[in-house]
Image (cartoon, rainbow, N blue to C red):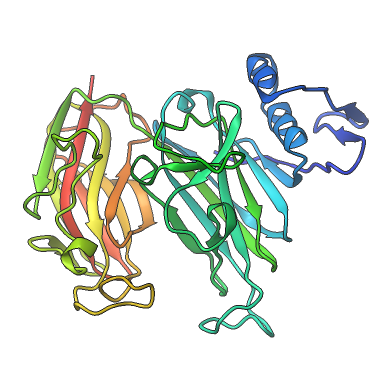
Amino acid sequence: MFFKIIFISLWSTCLLAETQTGCVEMPKINSEIELLKEITVKTKEQELINFATINKDKVIQNFIEPTKKTCSSVSYKFPDIKAKPNDSVYFHVPVDLRDRGVRFMILGHRQIPGPGNVAGEYDTNPGLTSVQIHSKDSWNYWGGPSSGKNGAKFAEIGNSAEIENLYDWDHYGHINLSSNETSMDQLLPDAVKITSVGTDDVIWSELTLKVNPPKEVEKQEVIYSEGTKFTPDNHDQKYILSGGQNFQGKFPGAKVISSGKSISIPIKPGMKISSIDIACGDSHSDGQKNSDGGWGKQGWAKLSIGIKKSNGSINWMMNRDNVPPEGVLMTSPVNCEEKTEENSEIVIKSEDDTTYVMGVHIGYSN
């Protein structure tokens, strides 16, 4: 796969189209509802340009073609983009992912080290990134823990990107950018944007959107921490975790995967995998309060998930996703129509720190 970058300027009266040498006049759109009705007849590029025009955003780049796509996710990885305060970048969402609710957003960003920008010191001039999803004529941001306005995440100072995992949107909900109202309704994404909302520049390098997987007809579960449930009897809850902050940062009974180690779980042959959910956390089980006021020293674990075939080869579906202090990570195969082979197994690998796995849920589809 490859990605295509379209450079645009919203401060001029016209835009350079990629395949033309002249200017293309911007269409007049009265509302985003009107725009959405016309999506089927517009190019992918024009759709993002229209979104940006409506919001009067200072867009420095549009990304159209992803570097990777699965049946439940789309990823864009690109050379570093330096964004000044109020700059935005827009990302296209493939049509086949738009009718399924958002589960995760993953962002790669950082600040450049230098005078006044020293890692580990208090940052009085912070670089912040807000990740926003367009759904049903509105922009929305994650309802989970944030560092600034519009759900912004603080970009750590360093020479490599910090990978932020905005996980469990169906658990934390989302906040409408215009009304400031919180909702637990599903977000059906048709575009994503990231905006620099701090006072310092930020560097962006990747973005991944994960949506709910295809409907499962059969499941396979392995529960290590007693009481952990992926589908609780109380439908007001998305899941129940028997570990983490409610257990003083500890994970009773969890499968412990040290950095560089992995575990394997046999899977059923001749089945189509819809998704794999891992209930996990990386808070250190030291019983001490951390700098954020929670239990346990903060962890830095990254988790990878793959399918190991009988010949020993591993098809990695998730590569080094940030492990939350406690939560559920999800991944899906590139091709949800492919059937599992005999003697295949799921491989779960932890890197950079210890991961505590409370349970594993494997969904199979028709």
